[in-house]
Length: 238
Image (cartoon, rainbow, N blue to C red; front, side, top):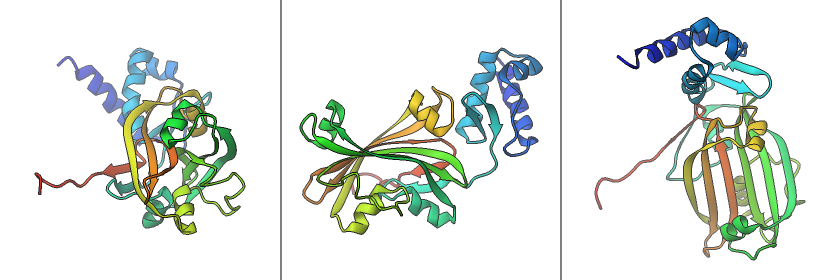
């Protein structure tokens, strides 16, 4: 019974979101909390459930907006494929914004991740992936200059470093990813038009060639609710 008031709050919020048109703005947190008779902290906790489902989006400095239905991008984690490939299967339009391609020097994290010396020259590719105009993922790939120089990506680049390397003929075999939940940092939140601290799905990945060399060390942040990742596993040791 102790959770009943919170469950009722979530039910009230679900009803409010359901009857609010897509892209419409909800009342400000103070006004909404007052109307529902709860504290702002309790309201914020309840709203995180709907953020995770991709039903509402908080935009820094603008407020909270209802999101229209967007098909989730579905992918098994047994095989590596780009967001563009996932979207193509669904007939979903994907676009890229905020593309930044720059030459940088390896810090300790990226030197370790790529297996290169500290201060080695690297190429960093940052961008936001949008599905039907909405920011859904923030991707940062960092590669050795031997693999990719900053001026080598074509004007037609659509956001996938993986697809570019494969089309070029690079012999890539394995990707190793660490997957976790992460709170959005200030720069990630700004790129994705969400609040700092919002929970995201984070992949930290290394992409290997056939010779075992790491050519790409990447961080990818996905907004929950827009992606369905799943794993097919064998039973037992067979």
